[in-house]
Image (cartoon, rainbow, N blue to C red; front, side, top):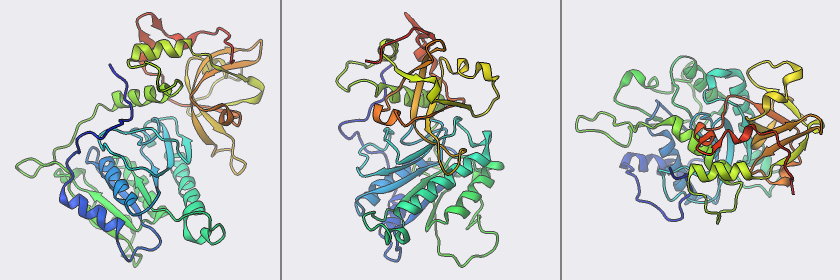
Amino acid sequence: MALVAEPEKPSPDIYIPQEWSDAADSIAYDSVTSPPPIAFICGAKNSGKTTFSRHLLNILLNRYKKVAYLDTDVGQSEFTTPGFLSLTVVDKLTPDLTIPCLKTPERSFFFGDISSKRDPKAYLNYIYALYDYYKKEYCPFNNRENPTKNELPLVVNTPGWVKGVGYDILVDMLKYIAPTHVVKINISAKSKNLPGGAFWFDSPSKEMVNLIEINPALQDSYNRSVLVQKDAHLMRDLRIMAYFRQCFASNMNIMTIKELANALASQPPYEVPISSIKSRHLYCQVPSTEIFYSLNGTIVGLAVSSEESENLPWCVGLGIVRGIDTVKGSIYVITPVPPSTLEKVDLFLQGFIQIPTSLLQVQGCVSPYMSTNVFSTS
């Protein structure tokens, strides 16, 4: 199986219906929208939210030099690996709307799971912090104090969990972000859709918001939604593998999972002093004597402790813990994060994001990350 890579040439365009184009144009070129628009995309699972968000990004980039993208879907993230909530500033068009590509976010948090149901409170706090950062850095009031910063439009993509607690989370997000435009994608199965109208307001509101309701891109002859069913587990694994493929130069001949597994097994890891790192297990308790041993052979979020709140550490990327040497006092980590950034990391976060089994079960390269051998960092 080949790895997913960012295409150099555009592939055939996917179908964009006229109402999608009209919706995107109305957001990007709404003459009454000042400052730039904040567009919130929501709808049922597999309705096309991510595809519409990518299309809207491209339309906005025709008018603005840069666009901010707030990704709240920890299961099917757009520019990061699964388990992240992120704010990314995009400055280039996406030629192929069918293939996601990895980008370095402006700010990100490691949630450590693929669904907000694990900890809805923490999930919302991360989103609020990312939006607050966007307001501080890219909204007009603050630009008067810092005129070097440009005002940026914002696209907010959301997960497809829109019932029960998922609905409550979505309403809280809408109330906090207060977008200028809300795009709601309705599928033909009405029971799975969000309520009609501005459902997040407790009562009729005079606040300015443009609610745009559209249908999925594909429908059959009976006007029923044709939803694209995705192998979510496979897509998550491919995204993680593409992330760690960045450990190697682009001209290296690594085209298959087996080649990637062998390359990672032979990759000299970074040596990190245990004394300089704290460890936090996000969703379980581990005896203090076993904390670092429990990290061995796992994926961890590489975080920088926040001076404002210890519960909101920014995350700079992922690492694979290759080995623990308690005698020497070292942890050995494989990561594509550059050394200049890695030096700032002082916290390892462990959640439920796992190394893809396809990397661990390749013939001749079984569980290479469980080795506790000491490797040179040179």
